[in-house]
Image 1 (spheres, rainbow, N blue to C red):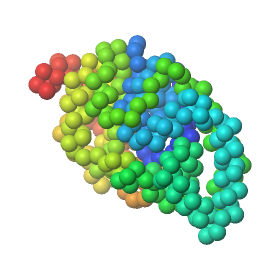
Image 2: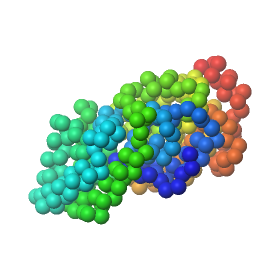
Image 3: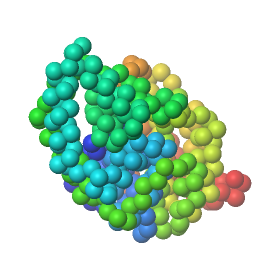
Image 4: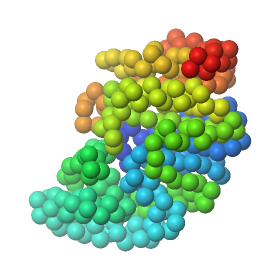
Length: 309
């Protein structure tokens, strides 16, 4: 699980963990898992693609993301096909009326009928502020970034290289699923490690199908009961407020924190430094991360938690 250069996925969305991958994987290394890497909330896939695991269960409630990566896995999407698609898109976008918006709407409307994975790639890279949001019927509803030259040659090459790098790490022992996180976490064994990056309660709640406190509570219950090691990404606090879920649920486990700046998001509150938290059910003695006065919880406390749950 030694990380050299971070593999950046071709799909973009708000809250992507690219800069946090080394931190997350340093924590995962402490757990010393010998089984599978399990992600109930795959998102863009950036953590999974840098995990180095030969076997994985990768899940997301967003069927479009899962369809895209399954298409890369089975060869329906190749770097060459992505290159051809984006080059054609660049020609259409740069010459379209309304400064490119006419063609963007054409792709958006086509995607909302057919849900083609390459159209998702286009929309995720041409959407406003790198955001990803879908309506109640799974339709894309983020506006255009207003850049008719978005897919210039250098940018297209960058995306195609990302497709190639992702394709190189995805293997046949990786299973992509489109289910609820509640169906995935119970599949983990004592040899596995679970990495959870759910929508952040009170922040990114419009990613695909929302996130309520009932979801956070169910996630807490399932992770309290699992025999696997787990790592949960969440937010601790920002300049305005604290994450109430930390004290209500996650403070019963070990927590480390780190300052992080998010560039994406339409709301200015979501585009400033926040304190990220990693919550774990294993000891973190070798990680220097309690920079906000959080104390370790002993294994005895964790066992008591599991019994009471």
